[in-house]
Amino acid sequence: MSHYPCTINECPRLSRVLCYCCTKNYCIEHLKDHNDIYLSQLYQITNEINNLSEHVRGQYRRQLDQWRHESHQTIDLYYEKKCQELDNKTIQHEKLNQNRQVIEWIQSKIAQLIREQNTTQQQIDSLKAATNAVQRELQQTSEENFHLNIPPLILDENFIQLDKTRLTFDLYSTVKSNFLTKDLSTENCIVMTNNSTYLLIGQQLHLCLYDQNLNLIKQIPWTYGSIWDMCMSNILSKFIIVAEHGIFTFDEQTMIIEPLKSLSKQKKSWYCCACSDKSLFLTTQQLNTTISEYIFLQNNYSFKRQQICCLNNEYIEHMKCSKDLLVLIISNDLTGERRLDMRSILTFNQLWTISLNIHEKINVISCCSLNDKGWLIVDLAQARLIHVTNQGQIKQSIAYEPSPQYAIQFQDDILAILTEQGINLHKIE
Image 1: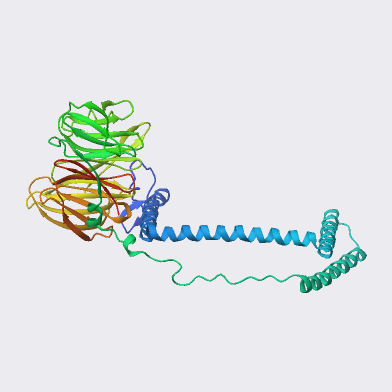
Image 2: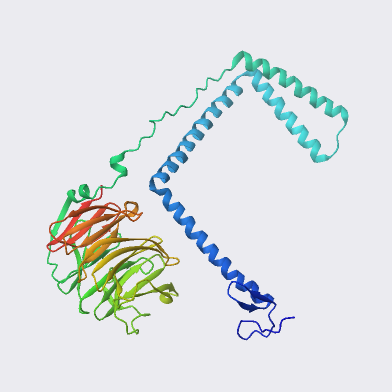
């Protein structure tokens, strides 16, 4: 019998097993708990890989699935219509109607005998004879009066066509489709964000809300220093603003600005922010940057976990969330080299990384999601836009005038680009 105590603190039991994975001793009860930890990680990885599998299927596979579903519905409706026509014909046909009535009587009689559990051989013979008689009548009637002409449903190879011009996102075409421009001073404006209705911009010591036509709807004075980053918290129904003098929420309905309660007492200089459905992610501008995740519980954001995603000489310059993905632009403080990291929100595991071939010692890079089309990188230093695919490949890089400063996707098909002269809206092709 083992004389080693169980590894778990305050457990009075002696160990029964040595785990060869971690070389620790466990009693029977805690061995199961220990094994469950590994199993829970496997389940988590399974969920993550299933999500990735679904992501690979892509929007266009889902379009085919939707077409198949709608086609099945159309066929079912047509089938029901023809069944009703056949039923009407059998009612109108004298012999078929008589046979239908006999069939219903036989069905009713059999159900009665089964229910009563009381029958005789004479009754069974009588039911068999009636069934055989109906069968002969139906064979004769079917041959004499009914013939269904059902042609095969033919789908040739060109029934559904893949339109390459629609499947391929072209950044140059999108930039050419500038359909609205708003001139405004952007001297103190380096970031912007949006919800489903408004664009939010920090402009000349004010927070300004613009609608989809770039009309100024509301504005309120801003007195909390330079704005480093902004994002929209859908679960709060408020904007979150990271600024020189703290982290704040902004309610578009009430136009109230107030410190974010759970974080206002922390003496940290937050720099980047991003929101998923339930979590708020924050980073500082310190080297070897740590991402802090706060989850929404009991009407407030509560600390959940931290993760280091940089080397000792690196920091996170920009961060965005999209569905279950966390995108980081990481800058090397010594060389100015930038890379784009794609990570899982669930585990913080790196899915892929790519060098952006940018070498600047100042913060000049931001990005925004283009949904299934990938990611748009804004390179202010070289006045250009870079399109990165969801698989981590640089597809296009084009010059943009006036010099771009920030970009967001507004609604599903509008790209809003903040420039040194104002805001441009483009139709995403």
